[in-house]
Amino acid sequence: MVYTGGAGTDTIDGNAVKKRGFKRQMQLVAGLAVSAVLLWWLFKDTNWAEVGRVVRNADLFWLSAAVGCVLLSFVVRIFRWRALVAVDPPPRFIKLFNATQIGFFANFVLPARLGEVIRAVVLSRGTDIPVSKSLAFVAVDRITDLVGLAGTLLLTVLFFHPAEAIYLPEEMRGLYAGPISAVLIRRACLGAAAAIVVGLAGAFALAASRGLAERVLRRTVAPFSPALAVRLTALADHFTSGMAVVRSPWRMARACGVSLALWGVFAVTNWCAFMALRLEVPWYAPFVTLSLLAVFISLPGPPGFIGPYHVAIAGSLLLVNPAMNVDEARAMAIMAHLLNLLPVVVVGVWCLSAENVSLAQMKETGESVAEAEDPGPEILPPAE
View: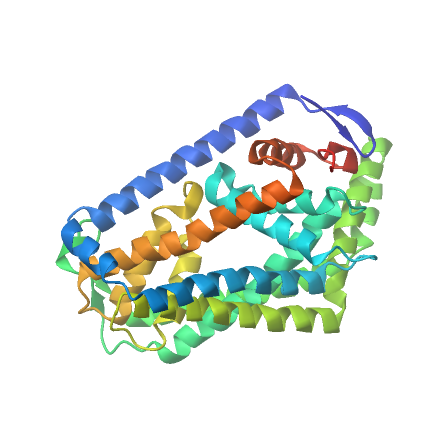
């Protein structure tokens, strides 16, 4: 496989490409296996007539409100990212929107979660922003996203106080029948929040060490391959320059504030969905749901997060209300997934059309960027 990078024409070793392809195939197989097991566990004794009844009786006002909140979250995300993309002139709002939604669409329908790479590719396409720098902007955006997640986990710890251990309903004890310790749940949330704080500190350290990579490469790589050292230094410089926004307190404060607001929109979306199906849950249920979702969708899974997403929704509802009818929780899991999937697909297809590219083209380019050591502007498909 040959691609044209920023430093000229290079050949990616065929064996390396085959290994990466095999690795992606194994990831897909593992994801499908996880999905199959989780779906079997959650739905094996489902009363589908009851699930259908719950869905048919959904309140259309609350359902419309949930869809509106999903669409609102698409816009709020861009305000966060726009605060972090520190280039002059700044990209247009619609460019950031298209890049983000195409990336989300790719994450839902493609294996190997190429969406974040594709997001960077779309941002760089037709602009003067190198792909490596776009990847840095995406990374910083994901970092600020963790601020909202940390806040959600802390709210879960503060308000989710089960009086005793929780047991799964009889219908869901095929894989595990023991108690779920309430203390363990709270400690897990607190531990995850602490890990996020440590990760954020590491990101700040990376941003502060812009010259470190050059010094290390000069001493280790340059004696053996000066050309490779130059290329890797350029890549590191692009990345750390993109991370430089972390050193701007005002930009970071704005982005973190918007991130907290965004996760608030996520919580309201879940609450509207719960009301649409007339579920009896405490007010803090959306925060428990979001916390569990963050854990489960990080598991290896197939495109669309099918399986992990459903188990997270149903499991969180049964945690906050163990007396809930299991089929109601299952109906909510299906409904919540569709409420997120359908807008992502519809808007993602529209954004692909606006950028005049196909998903297959973005997949090929994203894989090339992921495999390249020094992705340059020439690797991008031409902008129309």
